Amino acid sequence: MTAGLLLAGTLRARPQEGAIIKVPFAFSVGSQRLPAGAYQIELMTHAQAGKDRIEVVVLRGLDRQAYASFVSRLVVVEDQAATPGLTFRRAQGQEFLTELRVHGKRLRPAMPNTQVAGEADLALMAEPGTSGR
Image (cartoon, rainbow, N blue to C red; front, side):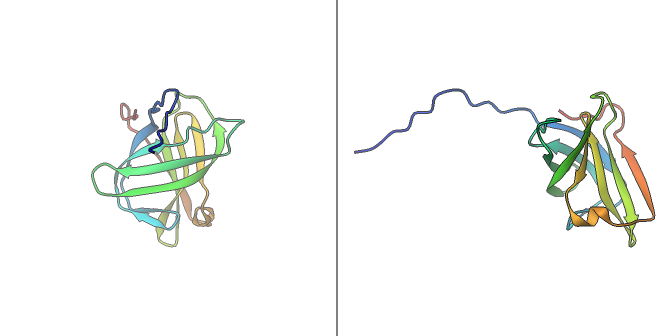
């Protein structure tokens, strides 16, 4: 006899939160090295301040085949209208992603090499009109 499975309720997909940022140099996030280019930043788990401490982030290359996914710590929730951006630290001759700002959230990759002591921080902001979904 064949058994059937009935699912009650509705399954809905939530739109991903994100922004598009152009990075003019190659950079590292965790153990992954990504080329220069335009990236869609997607927040996959929709972390909420006061409730969640982590967020899964995806960087998806728009003009090149590049992809990275990683866990980030939710540091602060800011003004939703704040301009999205990325912050990098230059160390050992390369740039390391150290912070993301998107949809009012400030996130830090939860990876060892993002804590590296470096020469200087470099901030990149999204260009007007390039916010994602």
